[in-house]
Length: 443
Image 1: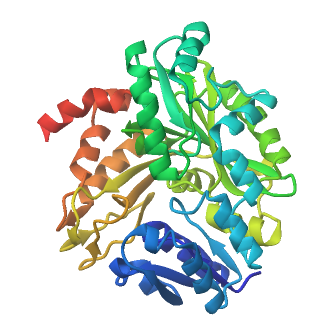
Image 2: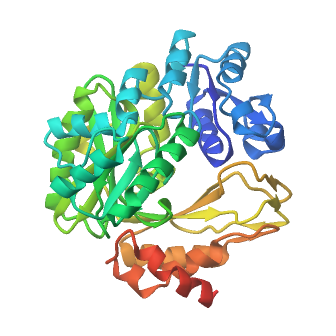
C-alpha cells in the first residue's frame, strides 16, 4: 500500500478522493491556486502546496509545478481527478518517468482512447456498433462528398481529442459545412491543443448511456451497471441516473459483451466509462472516458462499491477487492449537478440528509466560489428502491438544500425533476433544449 498521494485537482473531486484515502490510511497532498487557498480540499488534506495563480494554465495545468509538489512532499502517486490533466497522456507519461504512480490507465492507452477516431476504429474491431462517420477531416469538399455518398444530413463535427461540447458543431445543410468545419477546428485547437476534427451522422434525439468499468490491468474487468446521462445543456450533463429507463436487460448484456473484451485487450487499469448513443433497441459506441467520472457516486449507490478505492488499488497494486461475477445492482440512484450561476461568497448553506441522500461538495458557509473554474459546485445524489422513490427523495432533498450568496440552479433542477416528461422516463438528448424556455418562464 502506498503511504502518500498527491491530488492534481481541486473542488469536490479532491474532497472525495481525500475521504477515501483517509479510510485507506493514505496521506494526501492537496494542490491549490491562490484563488483556492481557503478551499475545503486544502483544509482537509494532510499537506497542501500552492502551485500558482488562478488561471488553470499557470496552476492546475502546470505539469512541472504538480510534479515538484509531489516530489517535494514525498508522494508516491498522483491522482488526476476529473477534467484538467486527467486524460492527458503526456502528463501520465511524465508522472511515470519521474518514478511516480499515475492513478489511471497507462499513457499509451490514454493516447489511443483520447483520439476519438482511433477509439472508434478499435471499438469496431471488437464488434461494437459505431455511428457512421469519417476519419480526420479538413477539406470541406471532401467532407461534402462523403456526406452525400454515405452519411446524409444532418451531421455532427467533433474534436478528435476533446469532449464537453467543445469543438462540436451540428450541420444541417451543405452551405453550413465549410464555416462550421473551420470553427470546430479552431475550438478544438484552443481547448485541446489539437485541431483535428471528424464527422459523424447526427442522431437527432438519442439517449446517452454509459457503462461504469473497473479493471485491474491484468485482465479482470468488472461492469458496475449503466448510467443514463441524457439530460444535458449544451452537451454538459445535468442529471444522471442508474439504471437507465431506456436500457433493457438484453441491451445491457450486449453492451457488456462488447465492452469487456475491449477493456481486457487494452489491459485497462483503473476506472473508466464506455459511452453509447441509444435509439430504440439499437446502440452505437461513442467514446471511452479513461478516468473516473463526475457521476461515479450514482454507480456507487446502486452497487455499494467505493470506485475511488478500487481505482487506487488497481493502479498501485494491480488488484481489486471485487469479483466481476459478484457485482450486483440494487435500487435506483439519481444525481443532480448543482452549478454556480455567479461567483461569490457562500453566506448560508443547509445540506439535506436522511436515508439514501449524499451531498458531494467543497462548499462551506463563508467560502468563496471563484470565477475561474468549472461552474459545478456540488452533486446531490439519492438512492431509492425504485425510480419513483428516487424521484420523491430527490425532490425532498432539493427542497432541503439552500445555498445563498451566489446564484445557482437548484430551482431549475427542482423544476426538471417535477416535469411530466422527465418523470415519464421517455426523452432524448434534445429534451432540455425543448423545455428550457418553459422552465425559464416558470421560474
